[in-house]
Length: 130
Picture 1 (cartoon, rainbow, N blue to C red):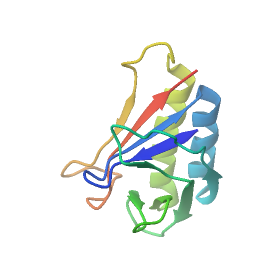
Picture 2 (cartoon, helix red, strand yellow):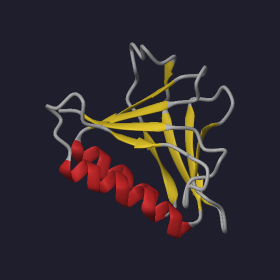
Picture 3 (spheres, rainbow, N blue to C red):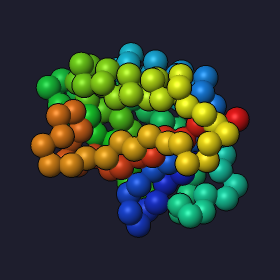
Picture 4 (spheres, rainbow, N blue to C red):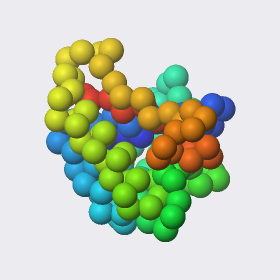
């Protein structure tokens, strides 16, 4: 599983097999834990690959996706019931995705009034690969 990140736009792309995406959803659902990510030799068109995805529970907080400074860590935080919404979206996509369809992906993007994402949340695209 890889996580590509653009320092310029703050957008991330999570790429994994269907099983890996379902496993990440379980970590998010648990509200605590981390996933070691594969090295990304060429992150283009993104700027770099990240090494670790971390999940932490923050009581009474909307879900926030972000990179901590110049570290190679991608953080997902939020209250448990809202982490569950994100986990369910990623799990459902992982179960139904067609890795052969290069256009198939899931967007996780904040918009004003979003019910589970914080306005501080960066965007993430989720893609299934073989």
